[in-house]
Length: 109
Image 1 (cartoon, rainbow, N blue to C red):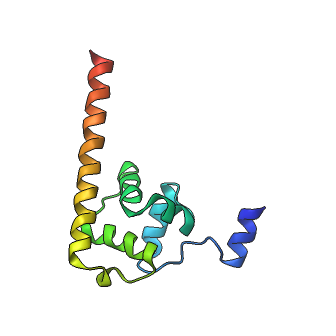
Image 2: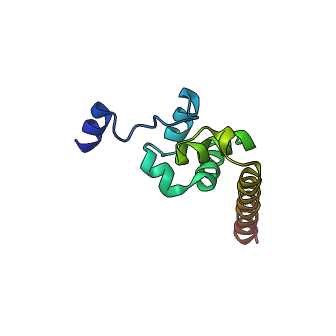
Image 3: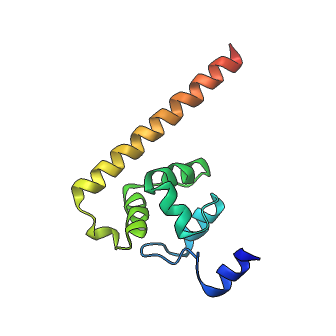
């Protein structure tokens, strides 16, 4: 019931800067349905979740997610901050890959 009310009122909808129809659909498919959920996760964790659902995430999409959280166009995020986000995303991806490899080795070993 609460979710229906949010949908009708527009509250909770992913109507944020940088998020077009396709990105919103991708976020929803990954279980991220509201601005609060996106903010709670943060841009890097949201990007990681998108990749887990088969979505390619480039530096621009990562910056778009961060801009959506901040309520600004991604171009206004300083380059140095975008570089830090990209590095964090790369590290998260490497850690995820290592964990997957480790769990496969344990299962097969």
